[in-house]
Image 1 (tube, helix red, strand yellow):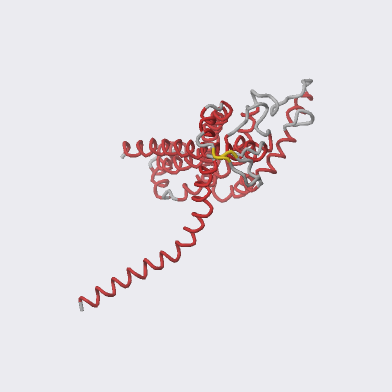
Image 2: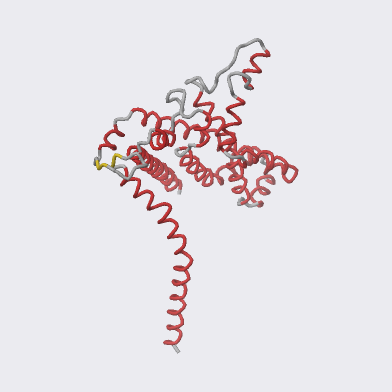
Length: 302
């Protein structure tokens, strides 16, 4: 009897492993083809001088990487990415949390606001880029028109190196804040109604409930949202490229726009691959450091 039960257990484990293999195989193949192979090929291509079109490739070793380490334009782009990252986290997540709190406290009557505030996230980044390029144009743009009503001159937000990056960050925040609103709304659904009822019975106002009860419970979700915002900020491309193309000068140049220009505008695919490899390394390092810091704080709190 014991041997029969053992054989049934072994058969069940074998069937489970086989089912797991069958279901995971397609995902593994897709990841190898579309993620791991392109990463390996990018680092391999960075060792060549190649225009991306001809069949002729010239092996130049690590020259592209040496050039990248000394390329001030790339490091300026990285600095701009860090500015975008910090301001995106500081703007999008607090506003998203505030909107989610407003909707959660308002109940079902706030459903209309869910729809209205979610609309920007449904729009294409390219469409948003063109929309705000026209809306913020020096001639006929919104701010220039308002300035003209009060007797002022035209306002050039995207053409001024001092304001271009912050203007783009504002547009990015307008598009992606609804994502963090929905994310925080989902986090609110995980909070027990009993906790809220107990706080209200104890005499806490809604403000006290938010700051002293809800916010500490939402902290893990907010940390996860911060990591998502950070990684996304380091990969921004389409909206920035449509609105400014990285200009004026290098004031809005990001690593992704710089990589695109090197690879597909200047047809320097070898160096563009080195830029992409540098992006991969820097994004990975920033992500690992951030997660290490957040996990460290979590362990200290525990």
